[in-house]
Image (cartoon, rainbow, N blue to C red; front, side):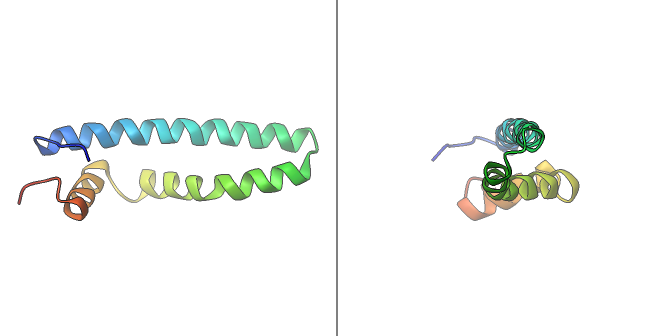
Length: 83
């Protein structure tokens, strides 16, 4: 488990991971659009089933919860931040 010296390090790490997760979600949406236009419905259904949880997490995180809040919540869960 990573060891963070202060809150800012944790926030920076979470921002980096969220950015990577967001990029993968965007590429997933583009791939789903390509499958739709190629009329590969069975593959599209499976692909969307696998992509949907990531999209829900991405949208929720982007619209409802700020990154400092996520850092505090994860810190409290895993004991990364000193009280």
